[in-house]
Image 1: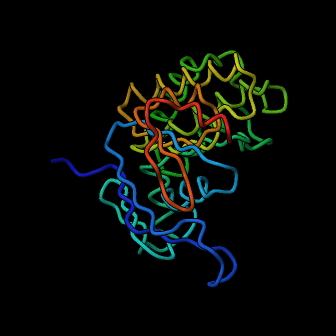
Image 2 (image 1 turned 90 degrees about the vertical axis):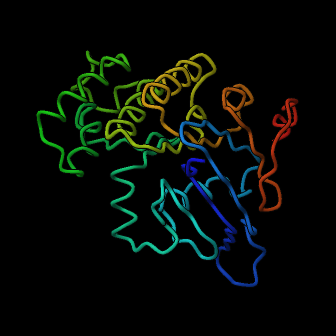
Image 3 (image 1 turned 60 degrees about the vertical axis):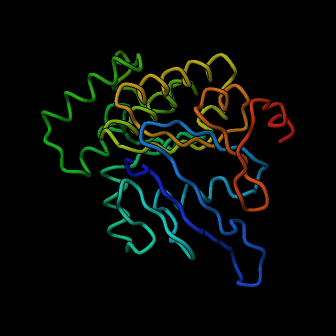
Length: 235
């Protein structure tokens, strides 16, 4: 049996004080390579916190996290940073593009940080610009792009270094329904092309139903959703 792409075991996480009720309470999760998992739940239930722990953006307080056999729970800041540059990609609701960089240079940034040769950078970037339909706007700056265009740039930036794991936090949350569907289609296409493992947080029933599995955050734990996912709409 192959090793899980993501393995979370017994994670407990608190903010502020040790006496505070944990936002994640002895939580465990296993995610197979190439699987797409949607994570749903009420605002403030800990969904984004879990993504941050898996992505190495926050230190693990209690429990264990492994991503493609790389351990994050005992990794220092430098190692967690290196893992994010090599095997993990992020897509955020707020796009998080650097306003002083053009489209092409926003996408280039992860490759430059990883020390990829300029020729290879250009090859990957040009191919992705064509895939996301923004070749004609490669020299534009984020402030002149629509929300959908900015999110397409953000997705291209997240996958340009060909991560094994992609973490998406409300990737369609700031977009209208039509644009959101286009962005979701793009995300699915890129994930399928490289057999990337995708874990995404969403409030959207349509987005969640595109996943192989849906888990709901409840009282710091994860609950598998059945085929009737109408309850997602209550969040």
